[in-house]
Length: 204
Length: 204
DNA sequence: GTCTATAGCGGGATAGAC
DNA sequence: GTCTATCCCGCTATAGAC
Image (cartoon, rainbow over all chains, first blue to last red):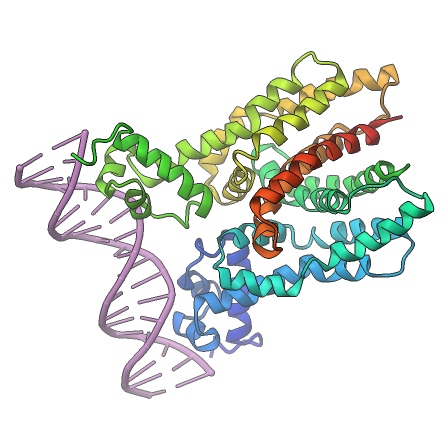
């Protein structure tokens, strides 16, 4: 009866698996670990999800969407250019403190995933964001509002400045004596620095 | 006799292990994989390196040094400030195309390494670079050559702009149809964009 | 120094009782 | 739906022949 708490077995497994896969990666997580952490057993995992890799796919998909979905909507919106850029950056800096390990998880697992999974991802986002950004950029350059900058350079720089600080967090908090809280405080201020940095860099 | 080629067993193991660990991580690499790839057997690995984890430490240390050593010397040099920044960025963009997976490898394994290994790393680099950078920054601000910028914001941004593009390479080349060569070409040009971006961002 | 054989453990998958 | 027991495989480590 103890096993019949409100979050059902399936939900508990999903929840524990999320934490473990994101923390330790696919290869670093065993089905037994997941079963133990969710107060279930290996047969449950098999019953509800079929296999370790299918369970992983569900979690990976979700993590990937966190990184892409919202931002895609912002770049595609009709906000004025500078506001759109600021909103883009702000969105990442609001979102990622809640999921600080997601960028690392997604990028590092993609390198190791079988071709099949990679293809599924490729279907989701055929460089849409860059397409949107490219259009907006051309408009602004024509207006003389910003200097001409290749879209790939700009897009890559914004992603770098938004994601890397979170990927670096594990290193900083483990080697330098900065607590996770202090680092998160630091990142809150860092956001404004990034916005200023990018907008200054675009001035004609 | 076939096993007695010029690169001895030990060197071959080290070499194969480097490739496999960096590609697939600690958990994703088995001693058997290493033995097979280096045309040796598991007993050799044990004999020459003691254990999987000791072999890993050697390779991790080397990778970590690639990321830190040279740059540390540049930031600590007496180059004029702007040249120092440009040299810093250039160094990463010259170095990392040869080791594109190193940033990902180092940061992702640090998150999963036991406390003991992390401490060994912490001893190597107690935030020295930030110390050097901080002094240089203060001088320049006093001279009025640049606007005041918190040293952590600047340091973090430079690292972001130098490392992330390489960490992102695996994603780009696997999901979008850009070949590795094309992406490397792109990054060569991206370097100049990053230098301009940073120097512009520092102007008063 | 090199290699085979194997111990001992933990991995994912699965059959079948309840 | 749930859980136990078990299969078979791959893992690291190691002993001992050569």
